[in-house]
Image 1: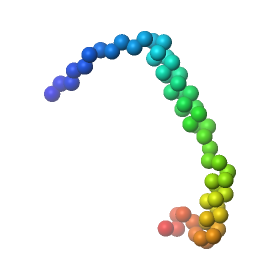
Image 2: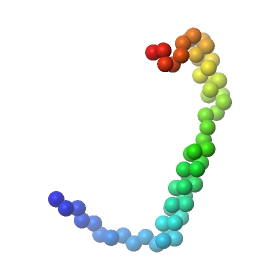
Image 3: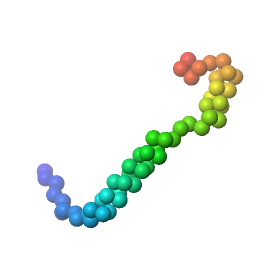
Image 4: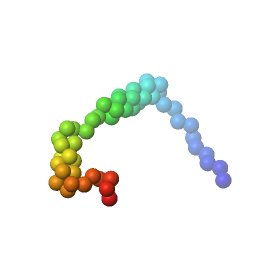
Length: 56
């Protein structure tokens, strides 16, 4: 079985723009952090339950 496909021509400007957009999104994702209120809620649930999530 052989897969055949026709070549596709992509202008270099569009390819460069795509790569830059992907890099920008990667950087934004890398900077994401868990908001402090999420950590506070997790701590509060642990305190109420007097258990840790790894205890299960």
